[in-house]
Image (cartoon, rainbow, N blue to C red; front, top):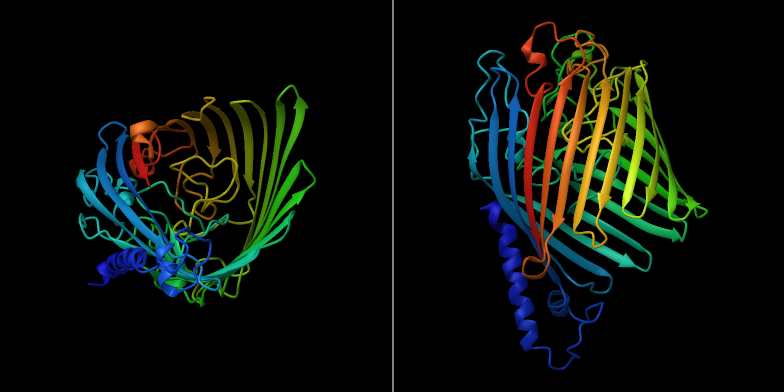
Length: 467
């Protein structure tokens, strides 16, 4: 029953909007930015939705199990017009498994489970093919001039809590979020989060229980991580500043404080210098410092998320060239050997310049990563083509102190193409992504370090229709 409450709300709001059209003769029929009555708040409201079809196939090396899945679904959202500065929004998503291999079966030779395709559905229940709906948003907002604050279920985009929208539905949060433009050069955002619904799930969780829904890897001593369902935290606070420094530089400064577990400080600077004749020099720098809070989530070390008194540092840099429809970028990321860089994968993808879809360096310390990218789009922005190649030097798979997920060093190639349709198919976009990953580190003859990790190819075709 609860899964259909948001549909009732959407239908009810649509009825109010229709009724308003027949009962508002006393008002100007031209829509205004704000409503004069509660009824007009719905009359002037806005519906939007989307449909998505996602096909994914993973080709593992030799006799290791291959996988495929075809998912389809969509979402419907409604937001009212402001009424004395207040507005409301509600929306949800549905999803179906149209066809797939057995995503709950283990590979016969290694005992490994499916890693990628299950993310299109419900990672907590591989057999769930139909009950995949989720209330995505349910919020109230107050707006005034250059300020608004939103309370409830919503989407936010920050360096470490973000949509990571590369499956069927994005990560959403529940909390209070403020956004204020202080000047032309300074914007502030931040808030308090008490609930998270990660992508590839259908439920909502407290902050503490959302950590560990994905595979949790190993403790620094080699034992299985025991933090899932054993962390204690009242929630998390974030604050971010966006700055424009002259005409060439812009920056971000963030602090993410996860009560009783860890703190992450993040700084980013991006520069864009004109070299004349349409040529531009692109520069970037990111710095991260992490520190454990108290005992890292649990007084028992085997059940903590962050090592007590532990900390880590990351530096990521980028340099590139841009002219017209072409862009070329080179990036380097270094995670120091002081400790593992940790951020819950359930919350979002890492923001580093070397990030490539389908893999992360999160969970490792003493990492060197280097990537090259080339991007092109046509003059009408209908076609977008991208090619990326990277080397990721992770610690040895047996060095579990620095390698939480025992992932070997690897190299990766991503090739993708996006096309935006027009005319009769306006609103439809297609995205094809091919991923290849090759082994560089030693796997000691153990295919558990190989399957769904290296020596593999993956094919993705995504169709999105928005209205």
